[in-house]
Amino acid sequence: VVINEPLAQHYGIPGVTGQGFRKVAIDARVNRGGLLTTAAVLTMNSTGVDSHPLKRGVWLLERMLHDPPPPPPPNVPQVDLTDPRILKMTPKERMADHRNNAACRSCHAKIDPWGIALENYDAIGRFRTTINNKPVDATAVLYNKKALEGVAGLKSYLMGNRQDQFAAAMVHKMSTYALGRPMSFA
Image (cartoon, rainbow, N blue to C red; front, side):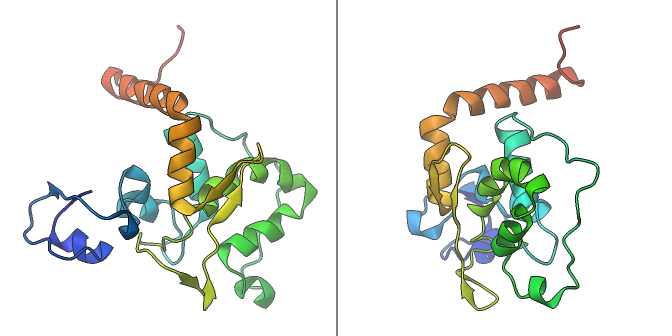
């Protein structure tokens, strides 16, 4: 990871001092490494209070794989966050409940697993093992029936099955940035 002392403290990585950012080798058990587990990416794709698997899944599909999901249909029902039953659920449980609606199932089956695999990270990117006093369940099954076991499974799947798509997406993003405009055939 590339961190300084305050970020190391946030991540729970001991032995890093000073304000300067530098590359630090870490043990795999620290659950960090790469863009997906940075506090910045995880925080911008949260509610500010809790994780947001939907935002995280859409971000990963759009930004990392250049495979955006279709726009939601016009009459998508909102999740009632005032319902006491809903409030007791973890974000993963809320998403499963939302997928019970047939109108929502097809899109969410493509989006949700990507964000659920990041559920061990809270709203500001700290690693966690419980949500609402329940163990975090960051396992998910992709639409192609491949299982993701948390962030390690997500990274493994991306490297083993989507590396070319990731590389193409990065070239597209960097070219767009370099040109200062969206890519097109015109």
